[in-house]
Amino acid sequence: GAVVSQHPSWVICKSGTSVKIECRSLDFQATTMFWYRQFPKQSLMLMATSNEGSKATYEQGVEKDKFLINHASLTLSTLTVTSAHPEDSSFYICSARTGGGDQPQHFGDGTRLSIL
Amino acid sequence: QKEVEQNSGPLSVPEGAIASLNCTYSDRGSQSFFWYRQYSGKSPELIMSIYSNGDKEDGRFTAQLNKASQYVSLLIRDSQPSDSATYLCAVRYSGNTPLVFGKGTRLSVIA
Image 1 (cartoon, chains in turn brown, green):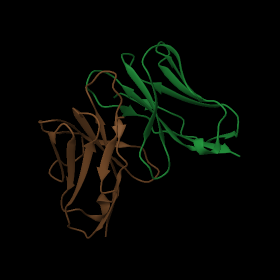
Image 2 (cartoon, rainbow over the protein chains, first blue to last red; image 1 turned 180 degrees about the horizontal axis):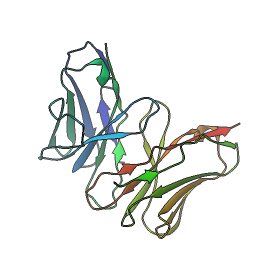
Image 3 (cartoon, rainbow over the protein chains, first blue to last red; image 1 turned 60 degrees about the horizontal axis):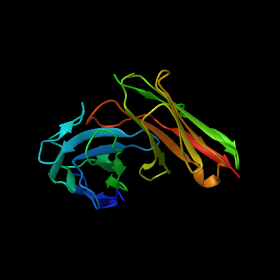
Image 4 (cartoon, chains in turn blue, orange; image 1 turned 90 degrees about the vertical axis):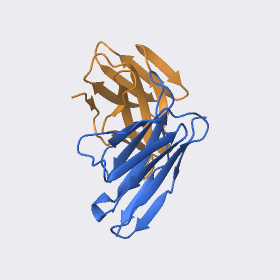
């Protein structure tokens, strides 16, 4: 149980392109979803937290107009990287949790984004 | 600033030995504690969760929690080369807040 599906797994595109990443909870309702970014050999960096039906809460230093997050249903959240540039190249990982309290976060397989 | 500290390693152990991974956290009011494993180029996968003081065992893994010392550890018995990965300690401080992750300890099990 607790499967999180993330798509696509790999994206290569030109600078200036907008890229949408989908994150789905397959067998549970994700009341809260999290988006992380990880650069090579570095730790996970939380970008934003989203609750279903609410606006996402962004971490300090993360541009909300550049990284658009939508969490319209209990099983789907999307992250759109708008006008991507080479410095946005990274490993983006979504995570989902049902309820709060003691529930763990379950991670998708990640999306490797390369901007040329 | 809530912090989770881990030794970055690498921690090298021979195959069959016990690997001991340690983590400390800054907020005494923390409620939930998790260990994740992350292979290179992959996303984290949950290994164990622990919520109360003491030991919790699951197969070859044992998590230990000491809230008074603000310390949580993970023991891996009979370590295998396939256990070689980065192990992330994660702490939830309260309610609906996101997990705070340590930077991870890289474990290398030598055959």
